Amino acid sequence: MRILASALTAALVVATGACDDDDGENTGQTCAAPEDCYPGVDPAGILGEVRCLDRVPGGYCTHLCETDADCCAAEGECETGIPQLCAPFESTGLRQCFLSCEPDVIGDLEEGDYCHENANEAFLCRSTGGGSENRKVCVPE
Image (cartoon, rainbow, N blue to C red; front, side, top):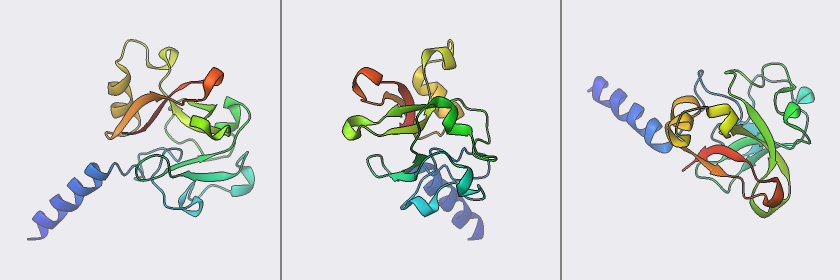
């Protein structure tokens, strides 16, 4: 029974797209509120207000930014080496940090495969919808 319960729990985590395990990146973690984001990272080091995007399934930890360099400025903020970028999301007009899946990052990989392998199995590569500043990012499907 214990093995079945563990298997069901693991399947539920994968199915819901949770990416808040020890191997994941802080940006893109699931969240219900900003307080759920960037655990163990000194908030004073994060360059921009921490946000939990509710426009994607399960929430998406991010923070406001001005440049790509702002996205990994705090010690411990970026744990995996997955490139991040700063871009406006949809019609909000707010520039925020996202996991990148732009062509220069993914190389010869297919966009969706890159996000599945490097960000989260439940993520896809899509445009930020930021108008003239539109970029390609990994977000939940």
